[in-house]
Length: 213
Image (cartoon, rainbow, N blue to C red; front, side):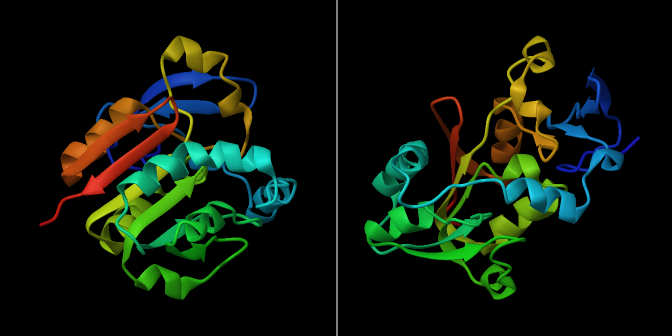
């Protein structure tokens, strides 16, 4: 049995099985994950991402991202600097934030593999529809915390696990690039462990603020 990829707990509990994968839940942080044996090869994963057609000129995509962009802009000081982590082939949230006067650096493992971006510090870090793809979310989470300045924000978009019954018919799990499934309980665990202020905005927008000290 694999250990939890978020908090490293080893006593995972069987959660669900469908025709293609098994899913396990951590009793500590409540993350639902698939075993490493179900992960795609990098070229297979990228081939799926290459099918995405998101672009800054798409008004529908802008409306989708505005559900994170608007509340984040309301909280950021003027001229903040941030990192759009997992920005994809058509970065758009960064454009929207720059239009509001903020400076945004891009990082994406496949499309903007800018390693130097991961050695800076930021007033905010955004990841829209990203964390469900992470094979090692615990490592990335700690990396984000180290890059985030005191008082800074982590802004996320991801669909949340609601219940075991709902999970069984959930379309979100059918995407084979989705391997880590978070819930409100998972974010409450992280907020308490890492001393972060937590806000849920709607059903799939999460804001976390780092303390000032």
